[in-house]
Image (cartoon, rainbow, N blue to C red; front, side):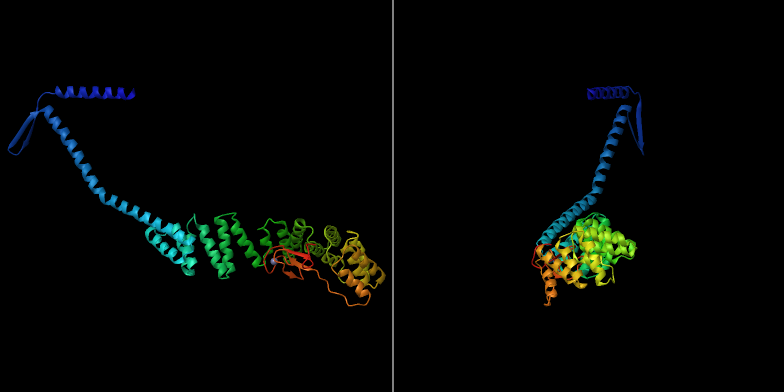
Length: 401
Ligand SMILES: [Zn+2]
């Protein structure tokens, strides 16, 4: 409807214009040297319009001719980009197939055709790494770190290279940069955790795990390494909260409480630990340092009361009585330990000692739940398989205590 109205208006205007032109009176004369052309006003106007149309067409044609080289360049650039993209794809396939030489060749082509685009740089870095060309890989990874989108990949590559070169300080810096470039990545967290453990920075490692056993082990180690008693106390509390049954954590808590003169609180922590899971380490920490055997024999029942009748309670009583020369009591408690199910030889060793026979050494030790490595002292990390909090106190070859 609107279009029809517009058409009608235009037609009317044109008709009015033609009518007005048709009614114009007079003539137009053009002089050129000795020649003179005279024509009517209407014919002169028509010629003027025709000349304007011709000029417009001519200018358009000239403009088109001028744009041809640019269009040709654009077509060539498009062809280069397509060839570069194809080289990148072939390079990625070669990378996946672990064909280092082919990947490197395609990466070089991609770089030549596309320039240092993030994808071409990534291909160049990864193919150089696969081919064992550390210098080229490093250069490409460094360039990648300057690209906003693939910065993480750059730092990841440089971190791996630093680890291979055993340059842990540089690796730590790249781990931090990788975390900033891509926060919350599980891969970066695992790398940072490993680096913190390598540097025995247990406090830093603590912030990188959510596993309760790992927290307990790392906080215990952090408490042992703490710079001051109050810091040690904070870590020890965290350790016991995460795993109240971890004896080294309970002992670390008691030790740090004693360091800030909270002797009664220390005893309370050991008592609570004994209730949770009696352990010889807790028993050893229970006795006042430098106490005589008789004092220890008097002090032992206070701890045993936390878990009466338990094998460990009977054993701690038997051992304290034996050391104090209270042979009758020692024998009674050793027998009670045997009756309570002490099959690891410790109760028998006390009885043998009382009978004047050579005592068998204890078979208990800290065993890695992951790789079964066995060692005498507790450690936050298995020295063989590097698993955190995997050491459990048990007789080798037996089930968990
Ligand atoms: Zn292990």
